[in-house]
Image (cartoon, rainbow, N blue to C red; front, top):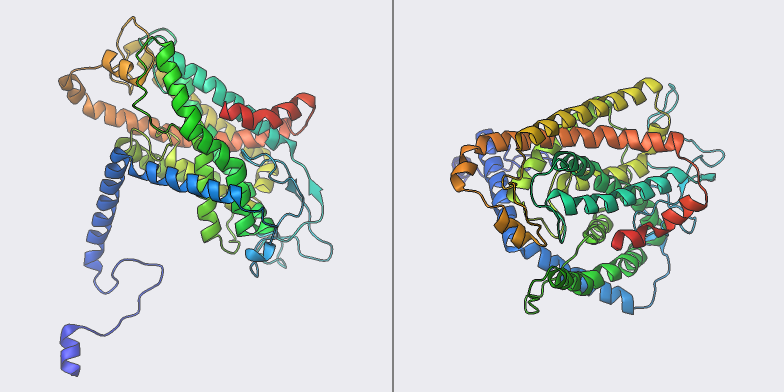
Length: 473
């Protein structure tokens, strides 16, 4: 029996729990990785092309929204999520009153008689890293987050207006041909897309832990689906399709009522907040001590996320579960939402607020360098009339939907194939530049608003309160 067991190699061998590859045969690890990555990319492209994930998620979100809307409102139950050593919940009502990004209240300080390390490593030999966040007693409102929210909402509106005149990305368009404004418009759109939705996800993720721990899982999800799910589902199944029909009618096309299709439109962001918050309630754990990344690590994260982004653009160019796939989209949005959760539990905003001037100017300088690189690239593309949109030619007619635009801007396959390598390198280079811009400019923006815009007034309050409605419209 011993000889048989030895011959069949049936002895159990210890394996580290953090590894998924075979430790008894390292030579096969490479094949596991290759097959895993290759299979994941194949499934991603197949599902995205068939739009299977989108319809499944739409149905689940609609069912959950209806369910939470018609059951009695649950009372807050912090014990539903509270865990020993976890971060304390905010007990101030209104911490997430604005359902768009919940940027209302931040806190500072620590209870008297307790250590104020707050989950991060402080200076001094006698201090030790805290396991979780200590519940504060002194509250301070950071108005600059409301101002960041308003600024990003304005940028979203201007972004989509610019899409109308730049050649794509919106329900209708004007001037689907090269103009003197094409290059600057494309640069403006690319820079915006690289960071603005990422910051929305970051600030949303920042307030999710405190809201979850204050309300409990069930009340947290019910609140999210009541305030976010209802407008999302209504736009998805009613307003979105009606808007599509209206664009067809206004552009003089025949309205085909039989081609009904759910259309999430700009509220796709709200749907993704529901998805990510639902996942967060299932996998929320104790607070982890994670230091704020250094400026060098910010660049490293921007580089590897950019490579992933380029692959995602190739695999899912038509979007993924209602999210538009472009620079600064899926991998960056997920990373920034996760970063917001870590920021809440490790006081990353305090690190941004208390940056040394040398480090502040280092971020500003690197963001400026990336900006001028963009400027050079898009000036060159404007002079040579080359861009990622290989079909942009000098046509003189306007377009009102993607079908008309694609028919007006078709090119020969030979021309595209001959420039395939150039476009791949251009895609990768722009993706890397976008990733670095996203990291450096996001920190620069947050620090700048804290330093210069941490104030409020009638107009600031009005814009902050109206941002959610404006975003949906």
